[in-house]
Length: 458
Ligand SMILES: [Zn+2]
Image 1 (cartoon, rainbow, N blue to C red):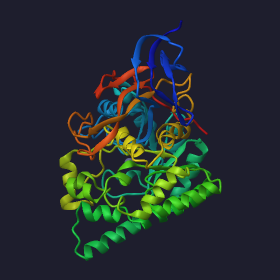
Image 2 (cartoon, rainbow, N blue to C red):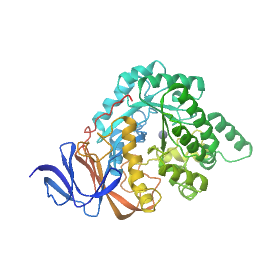
Image 3 (cartoon, rainbow, N blue to C red):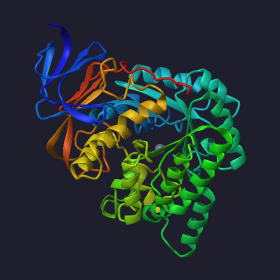
Image 4 (tube, protein in one colour):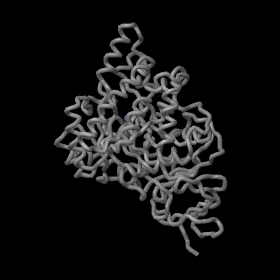
């Protein structure tokens, strides 16, 4: 009888879009076997997962690690702890740190620091605004490129923003040659600036509520997505559009995909989970979310886009700031930090959606694990529970209920926008490459175990 390192026995395993009754065994860093239960396999540690589900670990393409430069908010160690707690086994972060990730040297410094600190695997998206640096960064192994169309104050760093279409096209052409993902935060800055001036002239307060309302207006996103799709067609870049919470953006993206354009579509949880009552109750911690769940047309388009595959992946936009930093939005949201941490309660929020029948488990796994692995070019090494894949997995108790709380969260800022939410479906164990990194809410991994995931040209 084989002697594996681990055997998860008695539960259901999510394989090829379905939950099957079976046991999963791990040897070293890999899944060694997924098999019917009758065959009892020996293992150093047998874990009884009766009544529980095994899902692939989450691959998150939208983290803000805050490291280097803003480590009062988060660092590579704390982000990876929060990730492990929330079921995330690979995170890829954005270049809006200090100094921003714009050159090979800065990328390499960032990578070597994360290699010392992260409990789980990780990648880095570098800035795609500097034409000379793009081929060099690709040669140095960056996971992909990120361009912000939004500008203004931190975290929307003007040094990382491009909203001139001629310049965007040049960047897209250069990124296209690398074969790496071209991740874009779509935003029509000019329309946003105009709506802001209009609101101030009407005497609206410069606070988080006014900001969130204007920031999430359909046309600000739709008009940006329309032009990005044209630039994609001109350049052939592998466009990855994030924050696709506008109904009309999703329709444009659906059409572009049906024409065969190379575009993938990401949505982040805050926009379709956090509503007006959250914004009123928790204030700036929710901004710029708060205005979408009450919009029936948008919500219907979002759920439809999960079902028909228009949305490819869910990216967390884990974006921690201290409570004091976000509180400044009450006086001036246009210059204050905004965003919220997501990782600690990440999988629970979605398991609750599955429980409520809003999204199928198969679509959730596709969006959290399978498709992100494909976008990075690392499927089926990651993103699935097939034998031979990395043993990145989460054990979920689908029946366990919990009230989410700020208590015990691992993100350095110590709060969650979901505090107070009652959910059904909780991760009880996270394994990364064959190591248990979280169990029953306790993170137990080892800093430096995480390995860098380099870019794969496609
Ligand atoms: Zn972001």
